[in-house]
Image (cartoon, rainbow, N blue to C red; front, side, top):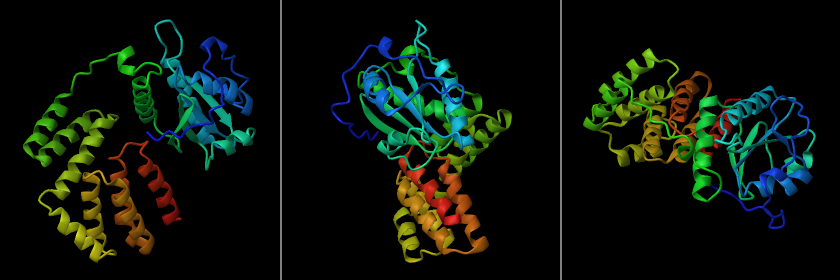
Length: 299
């Protein structure tokens, strides 16, 4: 996680009890409302003890209001044994606190960042489903715990979730290289539990592996480079790059193609790119950047 350092004179660590009550919020559940003064004196110092999740929002953006409320719901769920919050929710109204918005170099709202040991870590710039926000929060808390800040979610509430039968079947099929069988098992799981995100992710992963099975990676990438406007070759090359973890190259390849094509020709690579997006962590910088570039390419 890239965490740029903040100025050294932002203050010393303080007890949680020194963190004052939240100011009256413009929306319900805004947490501690940040301004240029309490950011330096209270919010940054307390990040040496607990992770601070800062939501940058505007009352003109319904999406940002919904994101702030989603964070508040999760904050109320994450309480320690003594009833204290496992992490701190803070918010900044960018319309009011323009100095803070400038210091954070905000480009848009909503924007969510984490603050750990007086350092900032950009997370994402959109409203995400609650389950994805939960995954990001847990990941950040785990990373912070490794640095001695707060407690890992697994330390505070270990929960063993039994695997679903279709999930076990799919994993066994994957190990055998039977990607079609894995897809079928994940599909049955998704049909039985339509809201299960892991089933949908399994389907997408299986479909990717089916598409690149038996493909000579080097030859496919070279062929796509030689014919950059061939959508079929570009999509296959992007599949290979995603399978190799080279997300930025895959996304850039398809976005460049979409920009070059006209009308209905954009549809297939666009849908393919959106399918590849589902395979990448929502907080990944390459994905966040690609979503912005795709929006610009389409409109």
